[in-house]
Length: 88
Image (cartoon, rainbow, N blue to C red; front, top):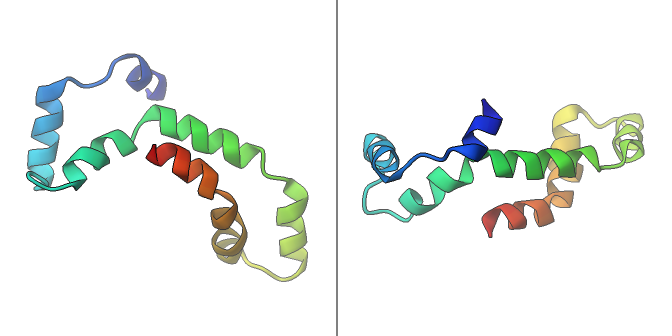
């Protein structure tokens, strides 16, 4: 399913209907939101997260961090370059 969205993107009319249904007409979000949720961004973030060193996450667990704290204090600050790539 995800690869299908890489090959075939939705034309203009379905995008307009989606934005209208969400109530985002005449907003800046109407330009950003449909393109932010794409298969390309999924692959960029997945490959970035797979390249994070497992030892870094293991050492945080040994220090007593829970999963949410690992995400918030370690993974998200390290993923700023990947998020910037998605933003471009």
